[in-house]
Length: 113
Length: 114
Image (cartoon, rainbow over all chains, first blue to last red; front, side, top):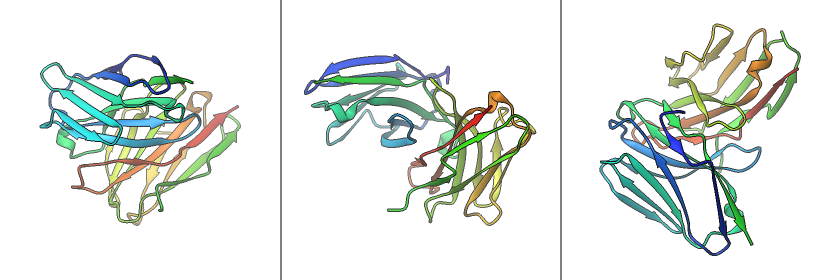
C-alpha cells in the first residue's frame, strides 16, 4: 500500500465537513475508490470515480480528482458520529481490467459530538 | 440483498494446522478476489479469478496458500501449515466485469494462529 498515501487520522466535530485526502502514483490508474471500514467489519464501497472525471457527487459525499497532481479527496458534508470509521483510498491499475486494487493505509475519522 | 458472504467469520488455530475459508460472491458476479489485511494496514491483493480461471496471483501468496473456484461460483482459500504471521483478516470480494469494475467486499474472515 505504500504507493497510495493517506494521512492516518482526522478529527472533526459533528455537523462539520470532513475532507480526507489521498495521493497515488500510477498515472495509468483508471478507477479510484473510497471504501469505509468500521471496527471488525469488511469494507463498504462508498463511491468511485473514473479517471476522466474530476468530480463526482453522491448525497453527502463529494469526490474530487486532480489527475495532474494524482490527488484524490473525499468530502463528507454534515459529518455524523456514525461516519466514524477508517476510510481507504484505492486505485485500480491495468486499465481496470483486473482486480489488483492498491489500497492506502487508511484514514481514521473520529467525529466528536 | 445477498452480498459477498464469507465463512467462518473467525478462526483460531494452532500453528502448523491447515485452515480453509469459503467465499460466496454476489450471485451474478464473474470475478472473485482474495485480499489479506493486517492490523493498521490496508488490504493487500492475494489472487483473483474470472469465472473458474485463476488469472493473477500476488507474490504474497506463498506455496502454503491455495485458492480454488471450481465451478466459477464459490471459492475456497486454504492455508497449509499455518504460521503466526498468517494471522490477519482474509477478505473476499467480487465484481461483474464491465460494470465500472465496482468491487464489493465481504465481512472478512479473521484468522488467529496461536
